[in-house]
Image (spheres, rainbow, N blue to C red):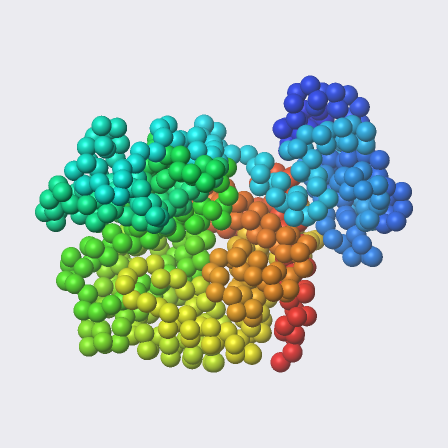
Length: 598
């Protein structure tokens, strides 16, 4: 026998009502009503009387239509009526699709609750604002620190300086006196000398104590504003591969934070993983890397860091791991017989990989290295195998350096051939990013830019991108256990079409959000469309990451497919909102690129 659920208890269990203060929630729900409406009931029509209540669907379904076309179907846990209450207008037809049991909150109580930001954001009229609010107030794992705190809060002592004419002996004495691991140097621009500099540049080279500090210091400084969030400091340290970061307040250096300071903020943060990677003793230590990355991602999610930023941090850590693997490979094979570059492609090239996924990479080496192809092939085999051991599966399509390697001249010809004859294969090359190696890949960038000016390329890429589409709204129903593929139905369409737009406008941006911004700046996307697609992409990335982290913690496979009945009502609504924004963009792209023409 089914157990009846108290309406107020049910409402309290779902977002955004669960975020309300207890007293305000209790006051608002004193007037809560229960309504039953048979199938076919028209609750309002576009242009008619606006709804007077906020409705929360408990059982059944409601269909939202415009001009006879179904836009959305709302089911258990989803809300409607807020657009009427906020705007004072009825903009859609609202029809009961299945016998409806709904809880009704009077308009006056709803408007009073809008004074609470988490509640109000959930019901923002603009699609982009609703999605952004969903990210800001998404539930996180408990017990984790706030990783959005300002970096300035970590500064515990004022900056310590030496003059430009100081010797290394004097600088070392100052550091010992203050018990610090670095000291700033008053030059223009200022510099810094660290304990590592003394080990690697003074002691290792046998320099005398009277050596001027300016011969071993580093400048210009990598700086971070005091108001920057903690995760920005992590990014700065990982980008520059340094361990000391001066913090600026009101234009002046207030102090220096270290990787150790950041490490103490979270034992599962990027700095902790970086330390672990730097200390890997051998290939036997690779097995735990994927788990460490997943644990780090979980800590970042819990700390309020969004999925795109997490992807950037993961990419920087993967580059650090790659540098370690390179040293091992060269120890086995001997020094490289020529300059080379390891190229990341796909999500790793775009710096959008959150958890470890299939490898997409390639190896490029200078033309003078052609007689040594066997060495470079063995080098690629070593790195690909070590990446598999670290948790990066082999690419099912074979897009890996062990098969995809050659001279820089060969690569330029390959890019030209792909653009001209195999544009679908060219798409991933536009995600190209050098991840390791001394070889300059500017000639490949030039070849890609030349290909981007080819008239047929953008249309070919658009035609390929539009093969991936969100499912129709009527398919997104709880009934029948409907499933969606967050990657194929939502994330991939945005990634591929953003790449296409970037090619058209000549942008060298690699990240999807940066490519969308380039399209907006070039006038290819209206402000509202750009905002809604960008936030849809952020939301889907974030939801996918959270679901995969949950699966990881439960030792289940990390899949992109999710059943709608496994999502909360708010999540289902936002998934549908996201798909609707993507479909709207694809419709405009179809017209823009005339992809229906042969």
